[in-house]
Length: 276
Image (cartoon, rainbow, N blue to C red; front, side, top):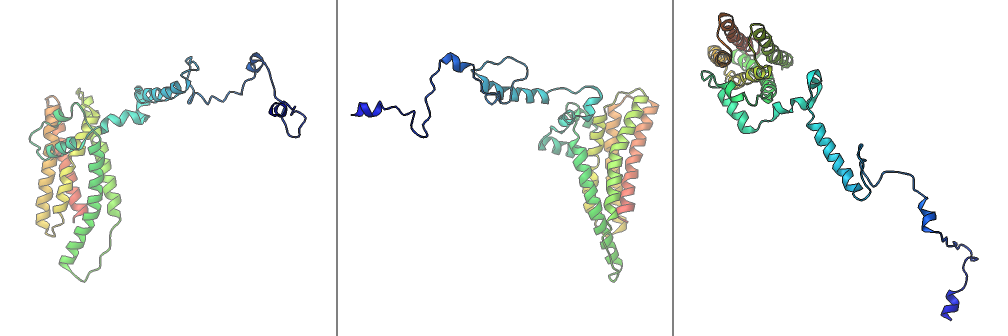
């Protein structure tokens, strides 16, 4: 009875689907529209077989990205490629702290030997940015303390223009002055490095950050002593390292003196404008 039941034809029943029996050869010509889902992402160019398609696709993605990161950018194209500047931020905390401490010992004159293998722009950006905020905030606080010291009845308001002046002067000085000395020394026959100059001048601002805390003291003579000492330390740091880095000569000696005077001028500007 079971055999008769199973042998009943079912093709005439409602909703039944007749079995399609074809050769393997006849079904082989039917192809699903290519979607490239087995190989993701698709290989660029090479002939990849079907067996390792999926794995080779992911391998291709890794190798392509790696090749893109390691692709050197030559000529002017490198200036507009962010990967060209990653090497100048490849520093850790110990290296940065060591260079900050070196900036507080200006007479040593060995800063270029420490940054020769790996000059960084990390110090230039973050020290300059810290100095901008410190000058803007502490300058207002120092003005408040001086006014309250002389007259308690006077009203005082926060001067937002301190931020604009601090950003324009600090960033402008940090970029333009090293760039000017770079072209000047090239004109005089020396072969300086622009990144090393930016690194040198960037770390020379660190002493001004420390001095800003002391400039909150509401005594005018004490403020002048502090800013002169800070300016002299920063100027000596730049001058001594610049002198040890370039060759001697009357013209090159004048550039060292000019660098010293510019740092002192920056210190006086900080005192007069932000801590009057």
